[in-house]
Length: 470
Image (cartoon, rainbow, N blue to C red):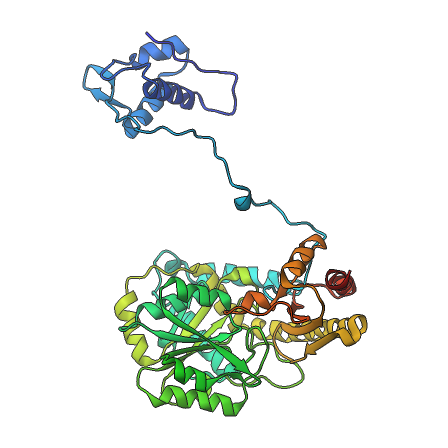
């Protein structure tokens, strides 16, 4: 009988697991051959001085995985196993460009546009409402929810965006998902003909990359002082226009009413034209009231409104939604009636109570004050430090603004030095969908202020100065 080895002094691995692993490796290494009979459970138990139950557990696992077979009243035998044709080295050699660090340096300061400040988020309130959702929706949490999200949550969202953004819709028109990109991908999937899309340039590069990955015909359209150029949209033959009219990403342009009407007229002119309105950070407006959505002006069901809680609450929440015109809603349900929802249902019900209780509106008011203060301090510090070397595009909305700096350094150099000086910044190059001249004596940065403390602003500006001019 071939010796089975176990170590009773090894507390990290159960005895049955040791028996299982030893027999498995002997089978794989041809120490046991096809149809060889294994020791009986009693024999092996006595030999190893373990219980019969321990051996039984090991044999049952081997049997379940197909390493052995049993014959009634005869015992256990080695199964015939297909051999690997090419057994590769199991050592994993990860290329340097794929390696990740577990944590980022605490010394990194962020002027990123992609983050949100969670220092004032009412987590205790959120947790209480989460327990409330667990209590009130126990049945719903055991079931797969509607492909568009729970009706109760969609009803709450419809009411919220009607009050805050002027969006006119029914709960049935809302589709909830885990981010803007899945929504846009689903939207493109339901189109009968291959869509042609006009997108803002500079613009949201992740959406542009998604559309190109879907092998769609995508046309970057340049901006003027009022936003996307509608004449160029017409020339592109597009039937979809993706825009961010309330705070153009990344330039910050707020599209005036005349351009909004031009854009709507373009959509209304030909059947099958639609505008995708990405209203990603419209909750934050300073000095004046919020500007109503483009969808609120649309009387012919041509605007697809997209909103998110990534900026207003926090990015990792992963809750976004779109409002579909009725015609597209029919197509959506035909195509996605069997969709497994991407969101966590408990999170959606918690969000529902967070909005219904008034906690959401109170949080937005607090954050507006905080962000306005940060924005003011940051602009003042930049102007004091850079003087005539900077021109700030000071649009009082959203969580970022743009600034042009006079410098002889190119984008590559600036991005490399930012890593060295541990400052998270993003240049305009990241969002340009077409190539640019990088040697014109100036560069443009997208400067966010959500995730930096007021105390760290002077140091962040000081690092930025060194990056650009040292």
